Amino acid sequence: MKSIDYIIVIPARFDSKRLPGKALVDISGKTLIEHVFSAASRSQARAIIVATDSEKIKQVAENLKVKTVMTSANHVSGTDRIAEVAEIEDWKGDQIIVNLQGDCPLMPPENIDQVASLLFKNSDAGIATLATKIVDPEEINDPNVVKVDFDSRGRAISFRRKIGHSIDHQTCLWRHIGIYAYTTTALKKFSQHPRTKFEIETRLEQLRAFDLKMKIIIEEAVIPPGPDVDTEQDLQVVRSILGTN
Image (cartoon, rainbow, N blue to C red):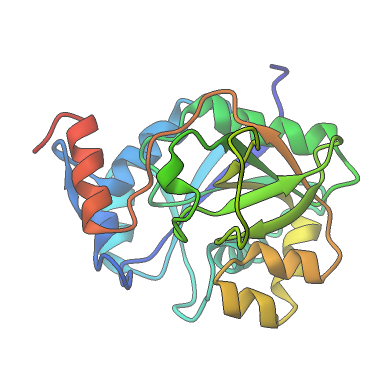
């Protein structure tokens, strides 16, 4: 892939509701945030920044020699937190920024480069993201698995937690992967608008972008990523994958 000038920002908060302190939980001898940084460092990003409101997370990141930007504790989404970083750093409007969420220790670096390249190739879009085919039938009705529909051009049509109708075995469903690339201009537009009704009801921040008529471009991930760490059960699964019980 052609090298793209992009920056990774890892939004990480300590006070997670479903798994408090998860950014610093131990997984195979390293904290969760260390594993995420390790994935980021294997990408082609020009720079990596941790955005947090926690002094504990800041200390861990700085021990890893990772630049840290302290942000407000009042952000309702990682995108809003990253928008504050973009403002602090005064990045130019067309700068590409990748949101690598702080609970994705198994994100392949190839996917990180891919989402940045996808946005670069689609300059008319403000946001790019990835998806993978759903192969586990249990995920179809799992509200924690966000489904995405997109057209033949890769333009997102909808994001939803529930299907709401029966699905036959020939229907291809796509799982949204929570990694995003944005331009600074798109971030600014997103963050300056208050949360919308559908965003609040569904707990899906990307619906704010829809309500703002922002174009979201999607592509199938080159490598299906492992699970994120949202719950204690997720944590045990990831520990098993990485060799720790």
